[in-house]
Image (cartoon, rainbow, N blue to C red; front, side):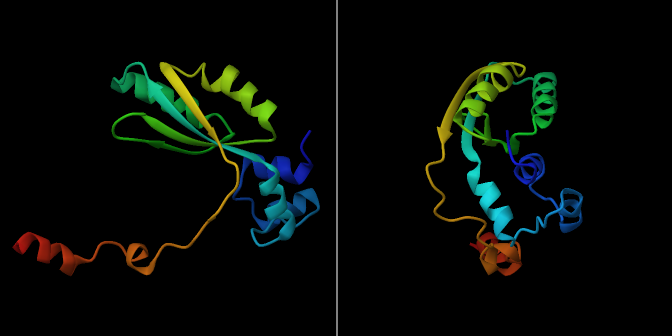
Length: 146
């Protein structure tokens, strides 16, 4: 069983300081307890290949995926695989259970490929200034003049 603070973060990693008051602890992102709690989780990247990609199937899959609280990020991709997920789990056993009983049962999943994170090397780095500001309009104009 997860510690209450970890369990709370497990379900909502955007927990605010006021949310933490409800648990009797501070859950601000800079708080060492928050960092420690998130580091105790097991992280997996899961590639999902669909067996069909019509609009109704995609809508049904994405709605079902959004209802899985362990899915921290989900992105639809061009090419193969069709989706890349970032999953949080308390341990490898819980991840295996989630993979076998929940993710594999999502609508029209043909194949799941899991990659378990060994260690984080770079985490939550701020965007470089050039990317954070958006596209450079002058650079775009130079490209069109060529």
